[in-house]
Length: 213
Image (cartoon, rainbow, N blue to C red; front, side, top):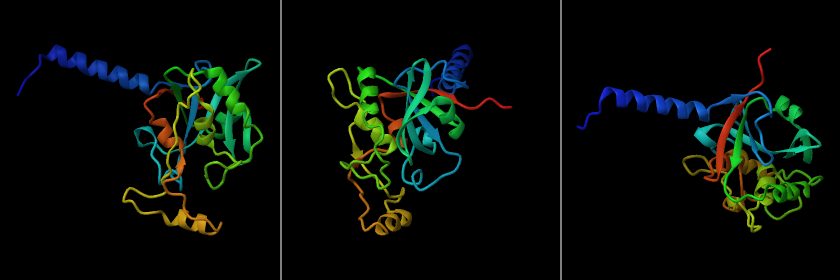
């Protein structure tokens, strides 16, 4: 077995610790955020969404919003139960105290992407997560809005998943869609915030937590 000198191992450990600390860097406000950053909500408890999706580092992520500034104020474009709305950053963080900041890499057209998201304001929330209807859910807002400099989507849709790690459809979702007279849209094109947080073109920059009082 090949061995390494102690100074080399110490240096390697320090580099590893530095990289880990950078990935886990915690901030408490929006001073380091940029227009177009994605705000991923880490829920404190698992739910029906996190049971069938997985966020980065296997974190339970069930919501995502789009950060931008307007008239000097931090805002978050999001699709929540009230529909597609533009929420003040402070209110968004008050409702969602554990956040990850994802910065989109590549040739993103940030102004156009935010304009695209704004065009969906007022749309109703898509409670059934179906493609090509008038309603919008959280990650769908991102998926349909973010484009590169050529106008191409940065987040192509993926096949929707409503099954567990063993490949079985969760009873919750079977009942959820049955009560609405629908089949579970397993495999239909869509998105989810957990998978979006794991995309290669998303770099997790910070963790946002409230300041302890």
